[in-house]
Length: 157
Image (cartoon, rainbow, N blue to C red; front, side):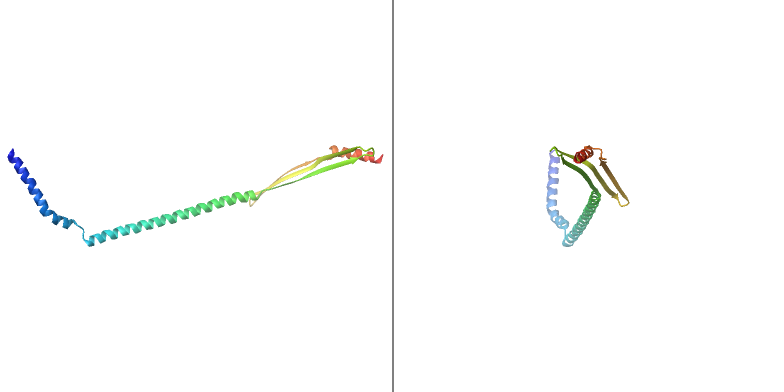
């Protein structure tokens, strides 16, 4: 057994000595030369340039998409605003006020809502227009008509 250990020790020592002697040549052979480094550097520079171009293209695409989104938003808002701008609401109210005084000194007064008109006009589309109208008229049968008759009679008597 000791003979195997001795031969193992000798093999290890031989391997270490040969690696020390041969290693400097291999390190020198494995070390890159200037032409190889230049080639690697140029390849890396081409990769960097390609990545920069891809980044620039991506930025351009993002800006274009943002502009299209802004235009679509503006178009939607202008359509909504134009519809709201096309609505017209209006109306009229007619009020009758009567004040009388008789010869005996009695005062009376009356306020009557005679007519109310309201309307809504819209044009939701270029070829479509709408009009809605509400009208209320008293028709002369309210308290103001009877008061006028009464005042007229007392004036003539």
